[in-house]
Amino acid sequence: MTEPALPIVLLPIGTDDAALDACLAALEQATPAGTRIWLLDDAQAGPRGIAIIERWLENTRLQAEYTRRQRPIGEAAHLSEGVAACGDMDIVVLAPDVRPAPGWLGRLVMCLQRDPTIGTATPWSNAGECVSWPRIGEVQPEPAEPRRIASAAAQMPPLHLELPTAGTHAVMLRGTPRQRTGRLDGESFESWAAALTDYSLRLAAMGWRNALCESAFVARDREPWHGEEDLDVLAVRWPSYRPRLAQFLMEDPLHQTRLELQRRYDEAADASPQEDLFA
Image (cartoon, rainbow, N blue to C red; front, top):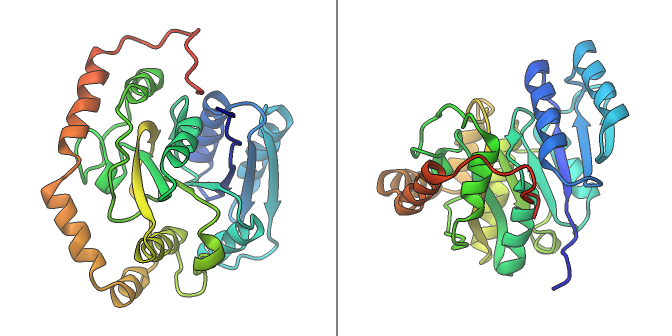
């Protein structure tokens, strides 16, 4: 089988300098060399954040580009512009405070390659609401050993179970549906997390699947931020969304899958330095 091309990774820049520094360090360690990554700064980074980015750009193995607006237009509008600039290419959107575990990107790519009906693929996270691990709907401390959780996740059966919406800590978006669904709605929403949720619900309405990528894990410290009126807009546009999400959280259809990941994590020794976790 031909090795699939890696997608473009979009990383909107936030205001938390320490989180950005940790995110870039994790990307450097956990992402294949040469991966295209676009750092989109809606005039959010301060002098220290810019210095962190510039130092990282000088040393990274990744094919990175950094763009910064002179004046902010809002994070949803800014991400919408970035997604539109990528045309119909597959992309991954990362929150600026995540720390991907080894192998994360290749596993997301394989997820879409296995099932052509998947429109979005979301990895596990310790702060991922319906895909939170080890407990659903709770923010848990990140695993102390990134290679151990990566090794455990890599052994999970690729079921690609259905989610009520795409996650916003990290999500891979198939490019071809955008020819029909159009760009992210950067005008109706303030936060790009809400815009991504809206986009994934549009995909689901057209028959595409929002799926769990059981073999990938991305750590985060907190749940996503939403604008003051974002959830109200989602509720008006998609009245069944919140009830379906609440039902998903109560019933937890991922319960057995979550237990299986826990079992494999408990049994996993530290991943060998020679083990290829980027596959």
